[in-house]
Image 1 (cartoon, rainbow, N blue to C red):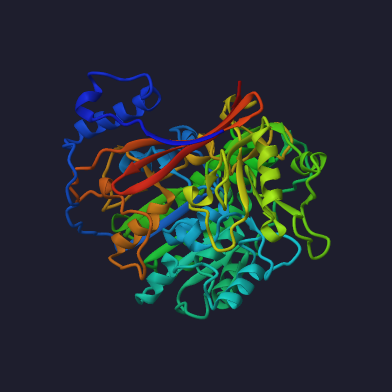
Image 2 (image 1 turned 135 degrees about the horizontal axis):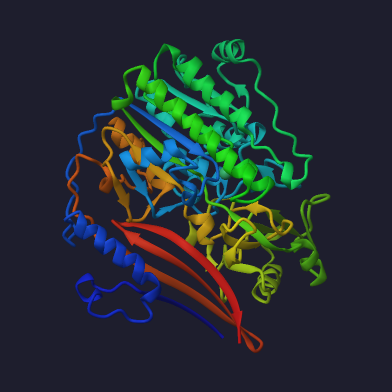
Length: 552
Ligand SMILES: [Zn+2]
């Protein structure tokens, strides 16, 4: 017995205050806040065409704090970011793109298109032509090079904003502590202008610029020791500071380019080594704030702070593992021939399990349908699986397309671990099941703590003192940045320009609509029930959260 139904939980705004049905109660408080925001802004609940915007900024700086949750922006913990938010717009309802991990969102931030279109749907993927036996890291230099060779330069299906800005004749700077920064401008040196910078994880494709950086700052510092007890974890402040100084003190010496991207490793590093809210994580966040202060004061000194729009964004939120699951052991116990890699060319029906943090990608050799069903049966009888997405429709699952994961190389099954209520050992909300020891931080699920992430913008084009309650997403950053720079994207993008946050735009924003999609399946006496909730807004759809349960 299966059922697949879609219900709309949004009520007409005029009727909203008169009657809140218990079905809409969960979404009610959010909608009420949106209504309030709209009234405060003087928005009429009607769809009108956005007025043309006049951008004033000559520069855009995007600063990525890897894994930063919005609830850690405070006056005491992040004074610079807190003040920046006051002077600009805080996107309180921002969405990390599922699968809520670094490489997926690094690509989404770089391109403004869904994972299915860029081709990067996970931080580890399996593609036989790149590695016939095992998954590979999607941001690795080797995978990127081989992927571009195999596809005629289409490892990412569309252009990145750094490439687009360069093609328009301007220089760019990408400075990242982590390898993911390479995805922003991977052809550097082939199509990049000579006065641009491409720096990632202490390596560079700008030899001349790199030599100057090392001469001034010394070599890229080592990672803090990871061979320590949880209490003794130190944040990766040294590498983040070096990467920031490479941009602000060395590369910007000769001028600030049209677009600069600074990707910091914290608080992701400390939150993985401990969990969100630990002393190390808070120290990592404080150091990000110091880096941001350096960016702002350098722009100030150069007299261009008022000509620069600044975005501070994270790639994803963060959760804490409440219970450890060993998936391969569970599969094997059910007679599923599963492993983390193939020993030799797999026989049809062999199963490759690729952990990507809070979600898992499952590849079945030969796409043997009986084996795919067996995998899904196990997940739907479990206490740890959240929403399941399959390439081909199956009872009680969603399709990969529902989460924009239907890329050419997509796995047969993707599932998110289940999210749980309750705080972690530091009082930080957001617990999940995972393939990690209890008490450690990770991300990648459809739980709210992973999906809701940081986005703050400020500058001459950005509305001041605005708390944006409308849905936004990492996918909207690239279209907004290109809009502000007055540069047209070479192909249509999936994200939107964040009109409500632009100072020069009077926009009667349309009503956001919450939708809940459910899939159920009868498992003996129990019912498997999975849902995803999305919000539709201005012609765009945001995946808010998803979860699952097995009930009597
Ligand atoms: Zn990350």
